[in-house]
View (spheres, rainbow, N blue to C red):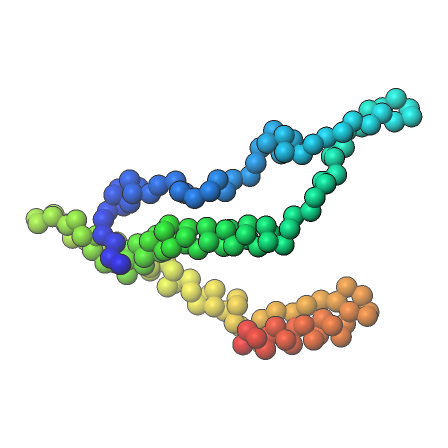
Amino acid sequence: MSIVGSWEDEKEVRHPMAYRKNTKPTQAEMDAATPKISIEMEDGIEVEADMPEEEAMSEEELQRIVAGEIDDSQAYIDDVISPERAMAGQYYKGEPFGNEEEGRSQVVSMDVRDTIQSIMPSIMKVFFGSSKVVEYAPNSAEDIETAEQATDYVNYCLT
């Protein structure tokens, strides 16, 4: 898939996420969805509590919801994130935008790539400079063996 255009063109192409409403519900929406009961205590104080749910979610309903969320996340990656990654890769490589005009400058700045390449050795040293990439600290005396085992396992997997 080839993506061509200028930075200004990219701003116009971006669109809000066209999937389900993946936003945190407002407090009013949460209050409306949760039935409440009021209980008056012996000392006259009124306490409001959530009403217990009558039915638990079925296994099939949970699987359907999880499958829908997985499908939405995969579609979001394919439709929104992947094109942005491809565009960022083209910018990083300094490829032409495709809207160049004859007689105009054809210069493409490589500042981002140069900066990334200059700090990469320092970043690599942080992650790969030690013989142990990860080390777990025990919380108590009985956790010492478990922490050592977890440290050895994770370092084996990562190196």
